[in-house]
Length: 383
Image (tube, rainbow, N blue to C red; front, side):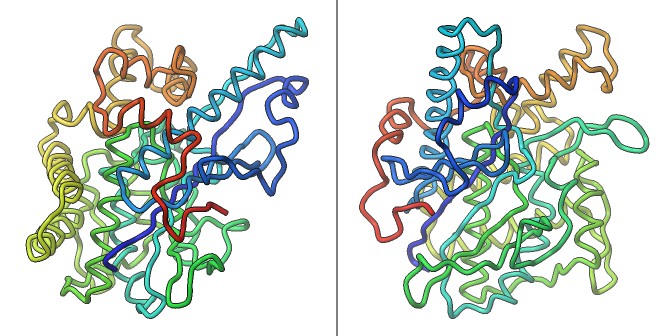
């Protein structure tokens, strides 16, 4: 497709006493409310609000509107906590962009005439290994003890392709979309983490867009079909070195790093033939640097840009300074506090204030996106 609409739907988690819950949610219901910027705010389940961006015609615009969702929820949060203080209730509500049960859903406008089976065959190995470059990172409890994993959502995936996402968590949701015009439909990717890092969000959507474009134009790609995607995604998540070896359907064995390198090489070739734009050039450069950093073990080179690396470095510094095991409750609290959307308190935003994380947006653009839709387009409204 020459032009594509992009959307993100992130689920947040809320920590608050029961008596404080109504101050935050008010009249917000499951069907949600449409926002002035074209997005939607709704409740997924109790204590799990969702923000869905409006459809954006560029990936940088998508990152801006994703961050605008954080600022909208932060404003709702500040108002709710103010009402608690006015009522002399000794409680405070916190909201975390932390990969609650529904995680992050990405939507990409695609041609209805494209072979969905071919798209899925090409996308699934990419999505299973994509957590190497755009996972949010998480400390999880495993049968062998606490472990730092690339992606919390990888622990929850229960299917490859499905038309429903309420009873299972597939990699790709095939639900059709009545908002798309004849000849167009949406591809829903449901395996991603909500990401705090602007550059990681840019990479997540940008790399996926490039792989989709290759699939849509029938670019020749090696067969990387996985023998067992569900087993592979969990194994890869628990190995931050990227050297987990997974079996392909044809009997070959490859590491997660090698699979991502193959996609990157083909994406570079494709971009060269098309003439890379500024966003694609940025995405390809960061993609390559991330894989190089993971392959060499020199994570410091991308610690400002890749979410799971930023948080991993933060947790490891804290553990070393406090002499704590990974299983310590204080480590779990640090893990969660990284995702606090309160800019005065959240650990990600503390890092941002000191210049320890890279930016892909400007604060003025995020502020404007709270109330202003993306440039005029047919697919503006979320829903």
